[in-house]
Length: 576
DNA sequence: GCCGTTTTCGGCCCGACTGTTTTCAGTCG
Image (cartoon, rainbow, N blue to C red; front, side):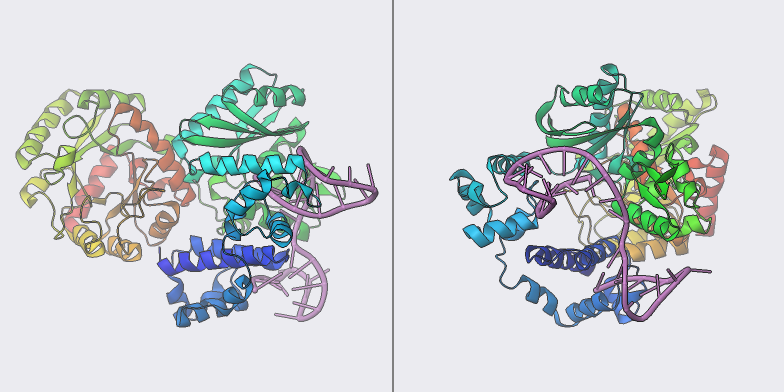
């Protein structure tokens, strides 16, 4: 992603925070936050949009923001930023991240007690002076102290695997000790976002109080933040830090409306409500209303239909054009887990995996797959037990023999071939030609000409797929210094395939880039990169990412039958 | 600050919970 996009997004967030600290509220602040989000999601380089005078074609960017972007790109400065942050202690912005502390509280503390940073805050909380302020009190001080503890001890956001595991644990706990009818995880987890902050659990049942009580007694609970008649929040201690879980209990008649509401995203809901308003309707978590009369709410489908839309899948609800697409009846029929017939990037004990080939085959059959590709590491990946050319060839013989005995299942001979620092492939062509499927990827010299090296690999006649094209590890590593726009363009020209790697720390390509690839006409492979039998279940995360990228079964080669896939792979080699 | 099949001006989503309140502001999602 273009660096300037992220830089500008942070600047507009900072302006929004500064405005709030100065007491400004309302829609100007929201406009800056929206601009920041839009810039974050943008795959196009903001500098290019500016050069071509197309900034204002982006929804959420109007003349005012466009002018400021242009100013910043031209001069490296933005007057507005300097203006609104003037006179604000830099340390105050960090205070806004503390749960329970908002702009009004920060302003009050700064005005009355000269609080300039987190250390000042701790001091006035402890010495009792904060509690003396108007509108503050003992409880409020306690809550802020707890908030401080929470951000200091919380890990970052959760990966999808942790979020799903926790959600399943707490849902089972609520179910087993209450009369709850439906219990479901909503929020960003249901939308399949690559990381999840809080868990949002939604339940229905005849006895809401009992459900709330069951919820707050979850054994991992460290702290109960709030517990009302129908709503509660807890903090739990998981292996990776403190996590917040929110619960809402609603009537069955409003379950659909509540599920829609709590699934979000916030931006999707705002857009939906605005649309409803124009039709003289009002949407809340209790339903769709015309003049205080509820006309929908039992199911999500009802809610969408009440405002004249088809059902919109949760993964699409990001305010990235899905509402317009729904209105025009051109929503994609998203790929489903059941459409997946194969996993085409799997390691075994032959390189750095921990399950044997036989174990993987059995597990894949259990999952209902008809074929898989075994792709061990190559020579240069010595750290990962990479195979020499001879080892790979004898591995191919072994797979050939095994295939003869397998019924209605086929193992494709493959390899995850390193792209070397000088842009070559790690095996000679004669060896690559023996493989059914060649996957190429970068594992070393991340920032040496990554774009050119990957494009070289794409242009190599024997390569089919580029694995984890950006090389990022979510929250840990930004990825190679690579121009994905160019990579996508090159893949489109050479009709090669890009991977969505389903490992929850990779999800690479991500949703935004995978969608861009699809729009450029590039086919996608959704693979787990499994190193053991249990890793095969990661397919779920890759499929969710694909759905967030608007992909259908026709965009994904794992949905092809074995015969169709073999035909495609052969055609790719002929046409190169 | 953005935006337009009622608008280039006047709108902009909606509600729960908490704490400090005697009628409501702040925060959150």
